[in-house]
Image 1 (tube, rainbow, N blue to C red):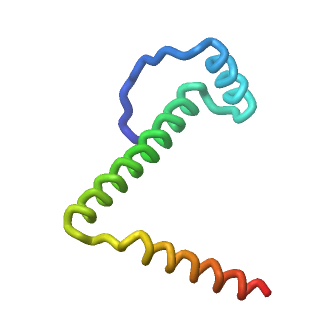
Image 2 (image 1 turned 180 degrees about the horizontal axis):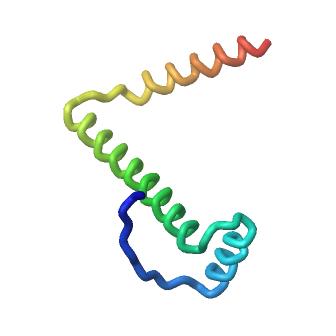
Length: 86
């Protein structure tokens, strides 16, 4: 069993009620569903932050592509995909 810890949060009463309905419908506890939602949110937001940090490091190190070159590559990929559908 995975170790866990307790945390208290405040919810809008409407959200709490909806969470309860979801818990009943899925036969899961409100606590389980809330923990899953928090974990998903934290993971997604950390990925965003890490991507930004990586982008800043790439820019600082000169690992960039000029805008015009990037757009030309994107346009070429779109044109190729459109030809492939024909």
